[in-house]
Amino acid sequence: MNDSAAPPGVEAPAETDAVDQLTAQWARERPDLDDLTAMALIGRINRASSLLLKRMKPVFTAHGLENAEFDVLATLRRAGAPHELTPSELVLSSMVTSGAVTNRLDRLERKGLVERRPDPGDRRAVRVRLTSPGLDLVDRTVMAHVANEERILAALPAADQRLLSDALRRLLVALGDTRLG
Image (cartoon, rainbow, N blue to C red; front, side):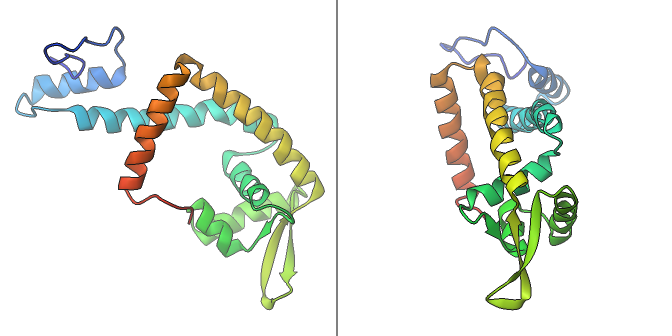
């Protein structure tokens, strides 16, 4: 018995994955756990996240970046001209600690990809801005990144991609993830 055993009238999947093995082990060891659908789904989301990060890393590495550095550059790029935000705004967008953002900014500043400037409206604050080389790099990297994402998802037909995206959107909304920051 495993989670890939289909209910009556529903065709069983032709392929199995590691999560099918995991849920089969639970079903064998704890037959009292009647429905392992939630465990299987969350397991697949977690495993997919880990595998996706591994598949995206080479694109960032090829551009001299780490995933976290690309995240900062992309956040500044999406902010629109003049492509600048405060460190606090970057913390909200990336959902990491201010210390982690500071470390990322230090690395990106050493690489000449961002600059910190005094905030003209508040002398105690700074603003972080993409430099011209930073803007060029993030624009080149995002092109390669999107192409890589398309390659990664090529195993799923476009209709399945839309269905999965819609289902995950509903889950994220139910979890309260309705806006950046």
